[in-house]
Amino acid sequence: MTTTPAPMPVEYRAQQPLDGERANYDAILLASFGGPEGQDHVIPFLRNVTAGRGIPDERLEEVATHYRANGGVSPINAQNLELKAALEAELAKRQIELPVYWGNRNWDPYFNDTFRQMYADGHRRVLVLVTSAYAGYSSNDQYLEDFERSLKETELEGKLTLVKIRQFFYDKAFTRPNEEFLAAGIAEVKSQLQAAGKTDGKIKLLFVTHSIPTAVAEKQGPQRIKDLFGTDVYTAQHQAVADYLVGAVSAAEGLDYQVVFQSRSGDPRTPWLEPDINDQIEEDAAAGYAGVVVVPFGFISDHMEVIWDLDTEAKETAQEKGLAFHRAPTTGVHPEFVAGLVDIMGEYIAGAEGEPLANGEQTVPGDWSDLTGDGGWGTSLEGESA
Ligand SMILES: CC1=C(CCC(=O)O)c2cc3nc(cc4[nH]c(cc5[nH]c(cc1n2)c(C)c5CCC(=O)O)c(CCC(=O)O)c4C)C(CCC(=O)O)=C3C
Ligand SMILES: [Fe+2]
Image (cartoon, rainbow, N blue to C red):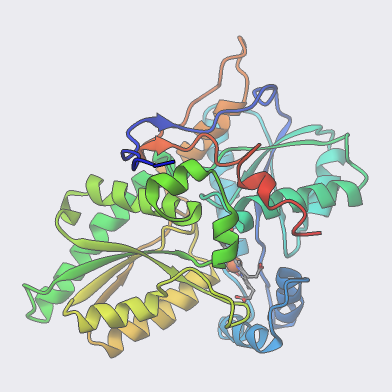
């Protein structure tokens, strides 16, 4: 059988609520990673994160130093509380009367406690927002596994219904703020270069996300997207967003850009997605670039992986090589991000006639409708975690 390369996707197709998922909800759950809040939390937190996944102790000690340097505190919890408050304000503004709860995979408040609280408060049907924009094992499946386990442990299986909203990397909610950050980042590096008398210096745009083991990436479907992009589905999602952002920001026109990875861990012999951002910065310096704009579009807040791996390590690499450097912010509580997330939630919330209360807006071209579910990566990784 011969295969003709498929054309680049031009259709826009988002995931849709499944049958029965557009309904009345009692509450919203902001579900996230969790982080330590003091020196004595650091090791227990890291053990929670890596439970059963064979991260070597030396790596844990290494990662612990990142937290220790910040007083043992990850900024992620405070950032999630800010996001929670911003979502509450936006919901109130639209007169959507749903309380927002917060729960984490790896630290207090744990899902078990939040689930018990929601149930005790009389809630039975909960819409879930996970703080990850992309589809992948760590950002989607693992959360669903955690939810299942918590429902069992709290004996709320069959009593509490949880519906997770769709991925949003391809939505205006996510791309609008990132367009703004990219434009500002280019302007900033240009002015750094100007101040250094390197007006003609070439700028490289580095779109950075979390690396994952290549074996995990390769398992993810659908095959359709692998064929179309010629790479794994995790990378393809990021490539599509990078392509879109560069096309949408006029200042980016003609600049070289690339998707790169950060924060690899695990056994050094296990291959993870590359290139690592630090290696790429070195290569870019050798290739004659004068500055880099680093856009951490794999994340939605400036948590520890961002402030350590980028603001400390990648910045140092750039400085050693004499490159101008700017790290763009993450979506955080950008008003358009918050409003856009509520729009996406609205796709799942039934209005008076059963219509969606609101709708997100897909900006990144492509048919992303089958990233999860039957035949997709969602089922192909089942059994791995047990
Ligand atoms: C794809 C992805 C995202 C992005 C999607 C999303 O946002 O969800 C993400 C986010 C995050 N990862 C975080 C922290 C950590 N991740 C680790 C380890 C790992 N991450 C992985 C993947 C991802 N991780 C993987 C495949 C591992 C290997 C071991 C395992 O399978 O678990 C480790 C263990 C030590 C180490 O680095 O080896 C830590 C401490 C924090 C919190 C930061 C803070 O505290 O502010 C956040 C938001
Ligand atoms: Fe991680």
